[in-house]
Image (cartoon, helix red, strand yellow):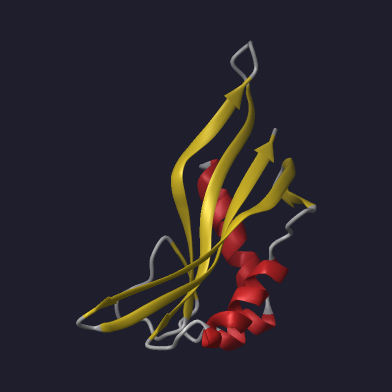
Length: 139
């Protein structure tokens, strides 16, 4: 099983276990992207950039580090309507605490940067609110 796939499944599971997120994100929580017909708002967990693998001199993997965008997405909604989801995402992830990831002993989650972005096209205005979170998994 891929460690990064395991991180994504864990993050989705944590977010789906939060009553505020499941109540507000009528379109659910998705890995990487949501189907085009998904109702708004919804939450997406997607990797940003290249993950880093740190190895010991003997070649054994010591840690994995990856940054994920975890964001609520709304259509024609503005940022204000996404604030409850944005706050719930931040509260649900164990930022600043050490968590277990399956059989692995330690995983630390850090908020790297908040994310707010709006894009527009003929289909409407799309708002994203959440954060970039770094996941550090040590072996």
